[in-house]
Image: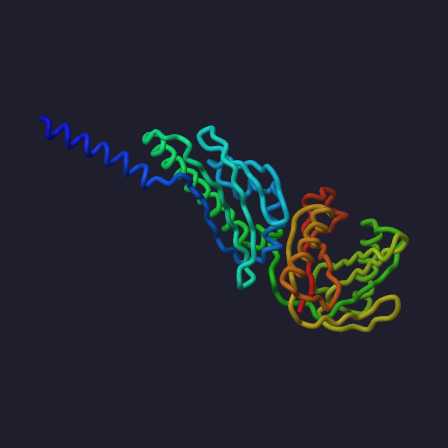
Length: 299
């Protein structure tokens, strides 16, 4: 009996010693994941915390507490415990981005049972943060996740366009734009031309009192033009293209995102961008149903 008691005591003592030796005084909890996007674009995307719900796992509770240049301070709530976690975004050697997180836990309790419980809780935190990181990595690895729109690289399809330019004192109304479209359509018909695709519009503010407006319509083949119309020849090169459903503000946001993509990818544009009015905005009064395609010529 004494031997059994001695053996059990020895096992208990060795277990306690093992706990103190093997369970560290401080748990460093961290992880990282590489995404195929530039660090500036991922930073810009992750800073839009109002979109976190689009990728955050439903079972995770992560709250924003602060931001710096390339770091985001958050608070993970797990089992009613608040754990401060810092996320960071950096460049790797191949110009991709690395999303990482880090937090730590101090062992302040000498109880072996508490130390084991803390160890298990640290493992639970690690698992939760790994889940969040995987979701963020998958989301920001996509163009839509980073820029908010599905920007695609494609090719110019329409090489011949008939265009009409105007410089107005303010942003043109839909009536003014569609008046220009009507003039173009009538000229194409008069010259026995054939319309190939939907009208294209570029609106660029020059200064406070001048807004350059160009409307163009793709045609099957070249036709005779005279003033005020011009024949535009497009090089069949590359395009950044994004199709959106929504009002003019949505289109403008997509244009801004496309320009950001252009800069992040270090691409240049040989011509002005334009918006294709796939939906007739006069006939469709609900602006949220407008379909538009932004095309941005690029090298």
